[in-house]
Length: 360
Image (cartoon, rainbow, N blue to C red):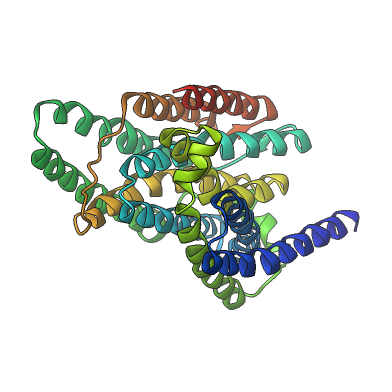
């Protein structure tokens, strides 16, 4: 009963933040408020809206199962990231877009995964999740980051700009096709083959907060509002960076990634605290795969219609950070079990990388 009251209080707080933050964003955009003020108003509004997206996702996960629930959460959450990135592309902020993609990979694997394992592990000494999904996702992670991101970096060293874009487009198309094939594999041809029996049983005894239709409507409306707020947020980056001494790389890797992925962050933590680790892991890994294999390639293709094209070429520091995060996450998750110390290890890696990117 106490937990329910506490949750109701938090929901009311987020509701108030949305009711105040969104109108202030509209007012500030028309009256040209200072960038610093708009940055904080927009960031708080996105995080508050993400709480509604998290609650809607939780309801959908109960109704539809952990895989579809996790996929929907990743999709709507990454829609925010995609929208922010498109506005950044229009503004010519290619470095910020690539850095935000890097930050999403690091944030999902290390920050979201680490916090989920840590907070869930404090409450439950040993948490289990589907080892078959974990090993399947491990192969895709290695392909998406180690293969598809490293190849453009190495090959582009001897290519001109046009050839680099052509290589990026070719790789992007292949990644999108493979990502869609992976969804078909998990949700159609092999749906239910590797189900986690314990999680399926637990879900039968829990009632969703909202109906499937209401949850989908809330997700859609929240995403549309976030799109508007995000457009205003992007316009503050340059001035905020100058004021706080933040580099374009740090803004992309840390700030944009955390704000843009707040929905997944909130949902994964809620699921972990309820011992629903299948959903939490599906959100963390599934969102990473969607960013690397779908969002990044789609942005490359969209950039073809922009004044400045975006190659799928990251900096060496971004690549090293992502590859390190992938192998660390795979090593921690491949046994299908988690505890608070493994979560702390992932968080420590994220903090180390955050310090590095801040000082670059």
